[in-house]
Image 1 (tube, rainbow, N blue to C red):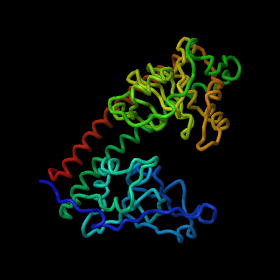
Image 2: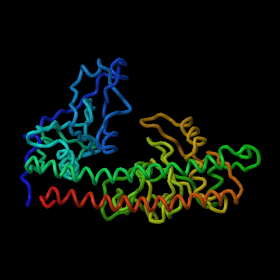
Image 3: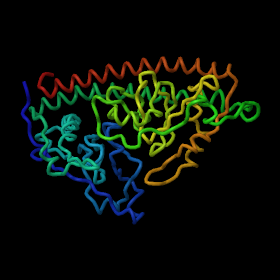
Length: 389
């Protein structure tokens, strides 16, 4: 069975967001959440945001009600959230206020999560992808009977809750590496007296260098070379099969930034200081301009220790101090090369790494669980919208 499809414009009111004048500080800082695309996809229901509006600011725009489905329509298309209370959005978001006699909002939320591929295809080939309100209104949603919509939404809610619980567990495990690092090293008085201090430039392989990656990634090439971007560094896990790819011709011009696996990768633009060790499956991939590649020589210091040191407040404060504000916050290669690392004795590094290895084992188990629940959710979603659930 397949459910009939109806245009969003026929079963909802669509409200495009707006930003109050930023020249008037009185518009901001109140209790009304102000949603931007950065808040979409993070949690299903949005109750609070980093930036808020005052009553004055809210009076100059249109608030959307609780249960409105929020969809990113400019820039990163198809990110979705749901209003947990009356709130405002910026102009990059369309709020879909469903007629609840026709579409149950929670069902509409899950239906909206399936729109991204279609939105990507219909967006004009411009520098910034954008879907107009009229085009967005023409997108369709399945329209089963209302009782069936509620049943489907309830099943998907349970699967999504399990998926989010496991993701939060992984987030907590990802902070434990820093907790172990602080316990072993930050409170150790020897760290300022007896241990060597070397710059990142002094810790890399002799015949290598710290460098940026590809200046302009270009169009996605499904058969090309994977390229690791800042957004990939910030993600709890990297789905290597779904990362952006560039043509082999572009990659050939940037052979010095090609990865072997084991290098430290550092975000240099926007998400400053986000850090990860390139896993073995990154062998042959390349990096974007906003990422720095730091090929630490394990004979000088273990790269995993150096990576945790870079994540520490010691280095992150240094990065923030050195940031240059151009179009976006930017950290240049010279500043990264000059970043100082305190190198503990080998036996302490090994003790630290044995603890990290146990932590990594736990993280791998959670990642496997996330993969299984993602597959379950995707399967349930496909079956639900085909009328097979």
